[in-house]
Length: 270
Image (cartoon, rainbow, N blue to C red):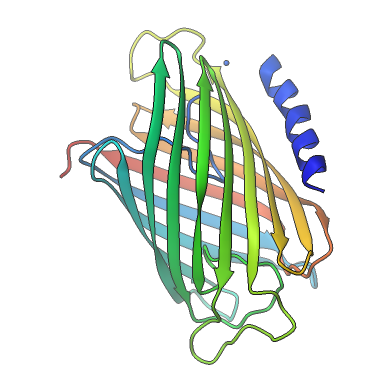
């Protein structure tokens, strides 16, 4: 099934290549970091359709991002949703990324980074999918490799993910796997501007990402997520995406839905 994911990714890469990207993705992080001594505010909104009943869940993830230097950055994030009525605080997490390799050339570079995340969540566990970024307490650790080729950006992410059971007595069901290998294959290309004249020009990027997970018991899913990204004044970013399930043999309560994200960078804030 991983071979199917790679084939699908290459197919959409051919589509993207017909259309020029920055090394910024919507559903995954690149190997590059935010500028050194900068801070950022990010607000991610998810609207996901329930498989049973057809209603929509709303998830809100605010983040504070800090670039310590060109190699190290941190995120502090909170989790909110309306899954149990009203908009409730459900937990939070810490994310760190360290770029350990760079091979920079004119109009291209290859970068690699290691990352980790640890989270706490207090909601009932209602699906087999492990998602430590908003649903499960636990941790993840992995690697990212990103290649920029002029206006095209390609990225591959792989990480180990472990669910430890949620707080307030919401333990992981005994029948559910508590570990998984998760991966993302991402490709993006710059649509506008065709020619740069100044940094105030609006950048428009189109990208497609394949998102998958294989549980330790062998069950898995594969999603496809096309998106559009707008960057204003090289400082403010707006992402619009849709995530759609292509294959699964595990229980997921709301796999399909929309993402809207707004992010703003504060340069030399530290």
